[in-house]
Image 1 (cartoon, helix red, strand yellow):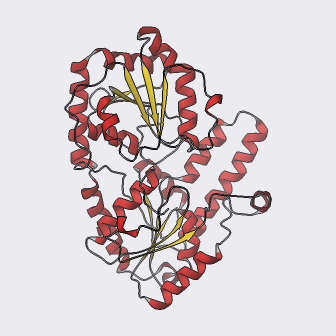
Image 2 (image 1 turned 90 degrees about the horizontal axis):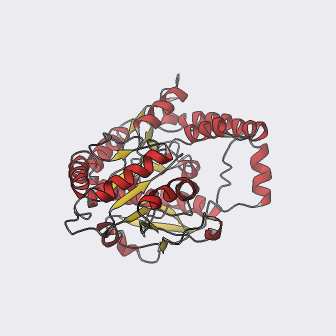
Image 3 (image 1 turned 45 degrees about the vertical axis):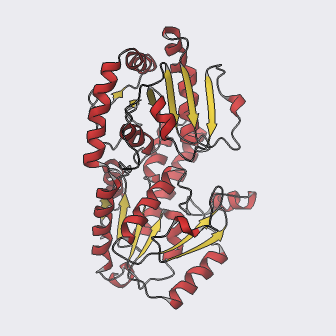
Length: 394
């Protein structure tokens, strides 16, 4: 990901980790630029020593790609992009590097162009864990069989990758535990560096909230977010409006290419599209909802809401990986009726909101500020940079 604008969770994470690393070290960035990326304006990444981009969307695929993927032993066919290979080779020929960090498996293939340099694979969630959940949640035997095949290929793929990197980095303890078990018998260590939030930028909101206003801060172009909103509108939102009919839900983030007409109908929905600055909206809304049912890692949307002083109601899956306590930092609910009632309680009780949001702000300041997480990240990669490459150690 080219991390600017930082308009999704992956970009936000990469941006802050890069900035932290650059406080102590010289950083060269090589990234694919696509979608909303603004690669022509490197002024937004002044902390990087140099920035290099390749205009390509690695997530686009063709029929040939899907056919190849089905017969490939890999769950993800990273057909190498020649321009990126050439760029990496050029950088390796003209500069000396102490460490290579591959941000997710899409970039891991390019890190292998320098087997003599120590490498870190920095993952944003455990793909094998997510795929395992798809197996158990498949609706039919055929879908379950296909999901099982993809999961098994992913497990084998991650084990192969582990032989070529010095460290697997995950964002939650749950993902780390699954990855450690998967890599059992291999020498590659697995460490957790959680997601965070910029507590200086995201100041705690002191102004009065607009009554009966909910917000979901996430792009619907991400399938996990789209599924969660579909679930919320179908099963939870009607229950809330039975008690508070004027309740509105504002959904932020990109909806490009999403069939909004396919969502359950409601006249109290507001789609803002991507907002470069979420703070004014989040400071106005009473409750942030996170009705997520799948996915991994940790949710930046929850951390942002906590930092900004917006009360949160989430499923346990949505808050997974965060050191939160139900009823102290947020409200957790997995059943639609319980989730809806938790939202109603917060909309009707300003004192309860104030108590939750104060404790939530204290939590993110103590455990999830990017400054602290960046220090942890830098210490880990410095340790790896001082070791022989995984290839040399084999």
